[in-house]
Length: 247
Image (cartoon, rainbow, N blue to C red; front, side):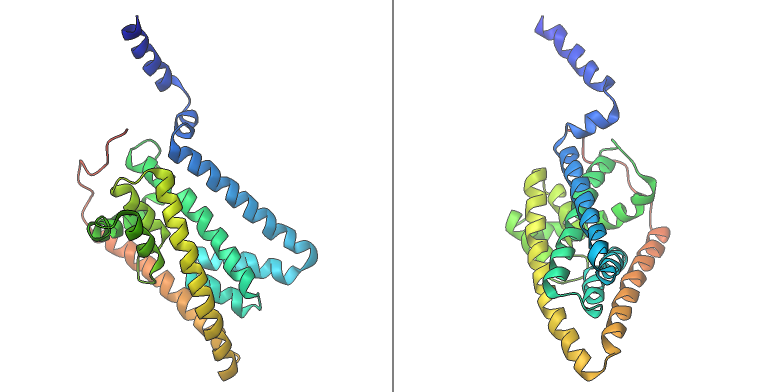
């Protein structure tokens, strides 16, 4: 009796809508939480328009700068537009939270061919290539290794690559995300303190220098993005068998 019921249950699961099957997985719940964080962040930024047009403009342009040019460019933009340190640090924690919680589950779904999003394939391929280059070093230390990897300010050591490494070494989804976000928050705090002091010193030297620093950081971030696209265009196609099996 139970032997016959098992295939029926399996078949019923396959007949469920894709979104239901995805949301039943831990990664689906992380994705849902990420959407919630994004909506909450957008709502808070939108509400700032009620009492300060300047803050509203500064926050949404800082968010865009962060997404396009990276953490340093985004935080520098916020400071150069007279946002306080606690606002810049808190906002950038929020940005990195929803970016990580949206990217990680979509990456896992793409790897397992459950959900493939064409425009994100290039970014996911770059993150996977960077993760594969580092995960043999990180795997020796497990969770502490992921934390330090995300925390240290080196190229390709951010939360997106860190979450991919956690996936490759087999960390449980929520443990992976919690570890990556803990390292990310520590990194944001450190960046916030250093950039605040650096931009304060630059303002004493010349009022235009903070804006020049923002422009340089943004151009570097965009340059690395374009370079990775060109390298990927000349690279080899993905080999069969590189996708982790579906659990």
